[in-house]
Image (cartoon, rainbow over all chains, first blue to last red; front, top):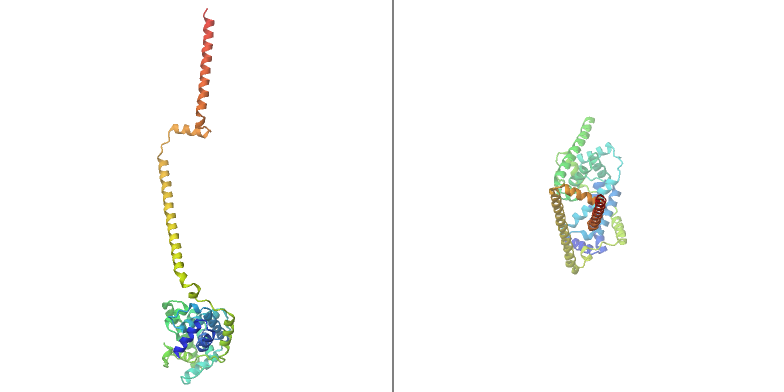
Length: 189
Length: 154
């Protein structure tokens, strides 16, 4: 499978459109996941993924073959999503009630509980809202997407120390926010 | 906190992050993105690869030309620097010499002559005129004296 993928990448680099199509097929889901987590909007995420793949095709000659293809691809997708997130103005349409229901589901149901796209978007928006842009992005990429520091550094172009401090402040603010919600719930009970 | 750990810790934030990490947003229609991407790149030409852009045979020539131009520009820079230094040095020397020259009254007279339009080429002519004038005056005085003496002597 891995060998096939490598072969597909090599053929795409040679300009083979069919090979590139199978590459898009293979990577569209993880690319969409990353874009969705940054943008919290299905349509915007789809557009960002498309834009990212088109950029990849146009700049295949810049790909460094010594690096993993997926890292390069995800860096482009993340940058496309970040550009979009800066352009769009989000309407704040999340109600506290909706968030409380989702939080309750996560807390009480079994760990394998599934969330739909809307719930995921709502939850990420709620957690990231009110944070400065850098903190939002570092939190999403590190804690939700699960990237390591080196990958975040490559995508955002900021030093390790700044990543750590942004993550620390983001987590602190989110914990305070969650604490407020949970204390409200306790009082209601 | 590592979302990959899969453990359910007591921290609500950890639990939330784990849930969000586990729940990937689903792409419902998996044909849309590949179709649109292929439509777009079908109309778009792929950027030529860098290795194909410059033939390998020409590369040493290009590298040589590049280095030659770099060396030439550095040499010119050094040359201009040296020249500038020499000019500054000469100007300084000249200023020092000018400052050491002692100005005498004769020099002032000469300077006045020069300022009044006096030229050294006209010097012989001016001396000749002056000489003739003096000779004429002498002759005139002499003849006047002789005629007086004649009148006085019986």
